[in-house]
Amino acid sequence: MTTTADTKTAAPLVRLTDAGKNYGNIIALQGVTLEVGGSEVTCVLGDNGAGKSTLIKIIAGLHQHTHGTYEVEGEDVRFGSPREALDRGIATVYQDLAVVPLMPVWRNFFLGNELRKGLAMDIAGMRTTAKQELLDMGIDLRDVDQPIGTLSGGERQCVAIARAVHFGAKVLILDEPTAALGVKQSGVVLRYIIQAKERGLGVIFITHNPHHAYPVGDRFLILKRGRSLGYWTKSEITMGELTGLMAGGSELEELTHELEAAGGEDSELRQVAQAFEQEVAELHVGGLGEQRTPPSDNTGSRQDPPQP
Image (cartoon, rainbow, N blue to C red; front, side):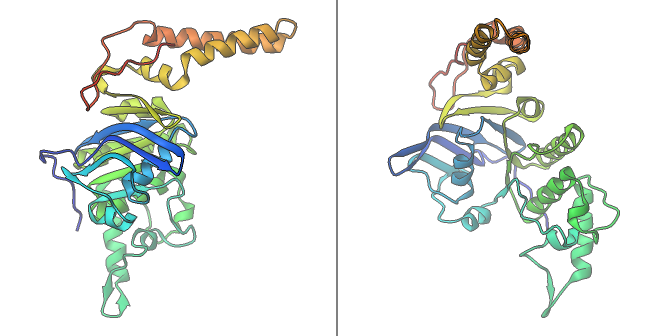
């Protein structure tokens, strides 16, 4: 039976306050605050090495935080395993999806949670249930007996999302679901993120692409080298500002000057420098050039977006 989150709960489904993670003397994550409620999408953005994977592991129960607090529906938790997190309704869909390409769609849907009639598997029941759950998420497959490896990347992502919803997820963590997809398939996945949100789930959407995050997100956390650059609601930050913070406006300007200096005698390098200069100009037009009142985070302190 499908279970969806109760959107009327007083406390957020998941809340981290000043959370951090150390591996010995190595600080992998520090001072991260975020929350996600029912029918909300919280986007976590950052480049490679920003700390996104560490954050996922803390929320999913793979690793325990060493600083700050982690609450699920208002209760302090410290999960000992991903199974404990899953029992509390926190499901993670990783980039590799944990599917077996040569197995049918219905078999992957129930992998590790097979329905049984006595000692035998209830194959007919699993086929029917998988088909119906996928339809409820707006995924109309011709045949759930086809190998899941024959589906497109976007369709496989959506099967994994529907599977997590069916088995009682209240919070869905999506680890870069659009990273290896084209424009069309990325749009398919974003549509199913909205479907999950409309069904009352809280979604934590991990991505490095602000153009995918902004249309579906309600809250935005940007990580850089294990630290939070800021945490905003959608009304507190524009698409241009989000893109500029992700792109690193000041770093792009420095690179532009370096390329211009190196490309004085090289026409190709000069063209690259001009392209970067145009990109920096577009970021400023997008909103980074205009400073607004900085938003507040959940801890009550104000966080200014870094100056480009």
